[in-house]
Length: 380
Image (cartoon, rainbow, N blue to C red):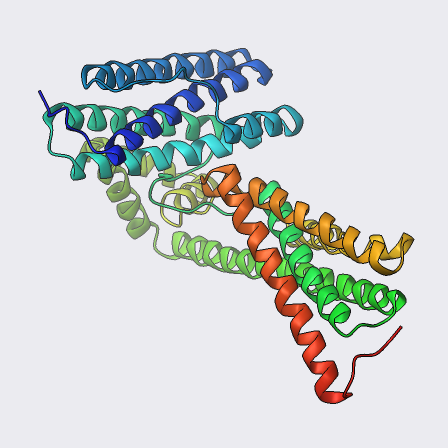
């Protein structure tokens, strides 16, 4: 048996793994509650049961080591993800859980390599294998390709909203703070803030549109090249496809038969080559949609520090803008934790401090530039 003289970091890591497994069971049950398809609902319930066994596995091991265990309950981050799933549907949570399972694979493999005790290594390896199975199951349900512990997935609707909102809020908050540093009238702050909101939202919208359009053009080019290769050298493409199947563990002769059957229908051959060789999945969005979502989210975020100046003046407008902006920075930081995997409070505090820093620097430069170019601050 491994030594029970454990350092606090080891105990903390074990508790973290147990919490992750408990959260996963909670979220799978959430999926089972909101999933309309009976087959998928049954799968989620079975996955939740497996996660329950994982929790029990950690608890049994930790008790053997003499570690105290508080009662398990869903983390704040898990409750936030469940709330989002109830409002945006099971597809959102399914995507997030697929990413979570991928992270679990990496964490358990790293744990296996970093510990020396046989029991802990056995537990971590077993959990890594089962996380791989879970990720494969979720990948089939979501219709995605690839291994989530090896690749980073592109942003979805909610990610674009969060990051667009964050950019608009932070950039325009800094602009408003800079104008306030010049000690100008509230109407000038409002004018500058609205101009900044329009400019930033248009900039982010065009950036999102062009990025998505460029990616789409690259994909279209690659697919067109693959189509031409199938037309000009079908035999070579058939051999490549057979090799791809062999790499997946299919016996050589069977792989050759499968490749020959697929290549007999050019349209099917192109779809298979795009998916298996180019690793290009179905396009779920368009450049116009990406630009519209990102630009709108940026405008909403940029409106927050400006809105108080539309109805208030003087110190009341300034302090209302500051409080709303700082609370929004904390909230958007907490929302980002859904994607980053960090704790809600820690992520929120980080964004809060970023917002505070942006406001301080903006105000300082506004004041200094006014003194350098004008000599004294502009009075209202």
